[in-house]
Length: 212
Ligand SMILES: Cc1cc2nc3c(=O)[nH]c(=O)nc-3n(C[C@H](O)[C@H](O)[C@H](O)COP(=O)(O)OP(=O)(O)OC[C@H]3O[C@@H](n4cnc5c(N)ncnc54)[C@H](O)[C@@H]3O)c2cc1C
Image 1 (cartoon, rainbow, N blue to C red):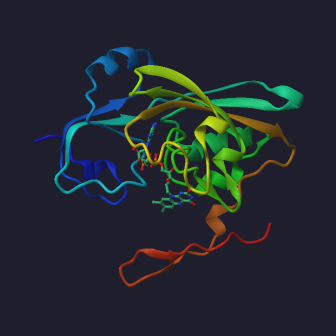
Image 2: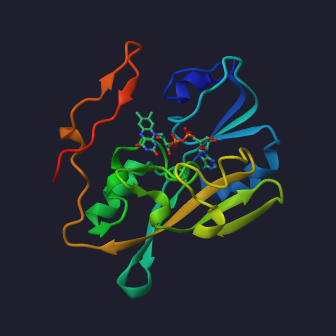
């Protein structure tokens, strides 16, 4: 029996996939591509998926590539590129530690940097689309790796061009343009009140953070 999808998803649902591969080394991407079939399902942290009870007939590819690099951007900004498997919270922590502002409200969102553009992850009025300048993705339809601009990502509220075309693109990295600020700081998630829950235990109300 293969790896249970339930072990890789927040909802703890899903029987085995035919094959489950955790992708950690970007240099192996070309070889990996040659092995992937059209029935490949890409996952990040598994926090926003409902894995089928019947498992997945094909490969589940978990994007776990890590790495953050920075370069100078225009007008004193800093461009931060994160590989797809970088946990979003760690990316936020990294940027804040370097005095960079622009994604600090995203700190409480579970999941990876590579998945954030899919539903244009956001919180408290800040969303990944606000700072994303480009991303690199593999287009499985054209078999080409492409660099897409923010406009080409067609972001909307909790949506993007990637959402209605599952399986077409694998996002490999994202580049954000951030602003140096002396007081860049994540919102204090640990002091938030707990969400009220429905009888099933599922949160039905996410509280706002206390005023700074
Ligand atoms: C407790 C909780 C709180 C949350 N709060 C918020 C919130 O405040 N704001 C918010 O926006 N979301 C929130 N979410 C939803 C979720 O955290 C985000 O959607 C997050 O971006 C999903 O990241 P992930 O890595 O877990 O993606 P996954 O769940 O693994 O995947 C989500 C989708 O993206 C695709 N995908 C994943 N990685 C890639 C990739 N590299 N390339 C192409 N496609 C990919 C998958 O195929 C799938 O369709 C919350 C979820 C939970 C469980």
